[in-house]
Image (cartoon, rainbow, N blue to C red; front, side, top):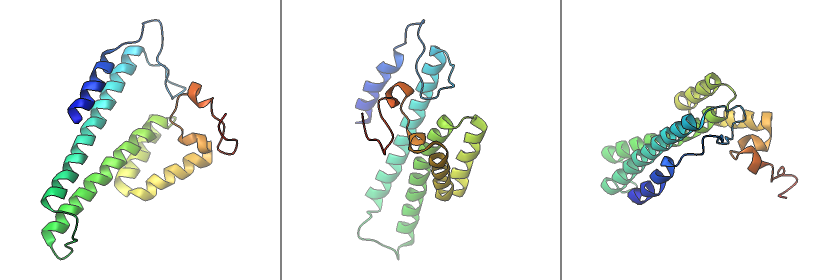
Length: 161
């Protein structure tokens, strides 16, 4: 399945936009060249594919060597295996959220600080970032679509055009 997914994604990464056009980015302040944006996109895709492989492998190995059911709460080895799988799973999800945070914050330094908070202090900081983002930007602050696609939609209160 992973090989099939990679065979679909990798040929698309090699395509380049014509030199006269700029790739539109969800970040309005983006002024990167096509080559830089393609390299950044490739790096991000490779990172998140590796993250997918690591987290999936950890959970699958734990499920096969220490089945979740029946619960074996008195078994130290079973508890340690599932604790480790849970930690890997949390950081997998946390790093995905950190990618969104760094990509949507106005300043990279602020995004880095929020990401460190999420990784070191956990879900309360993740929740705080979401709350502040919605408070500051409204429900559209969580939208990851580019501006041209976003303009087709109205706020939640107004519904969809």
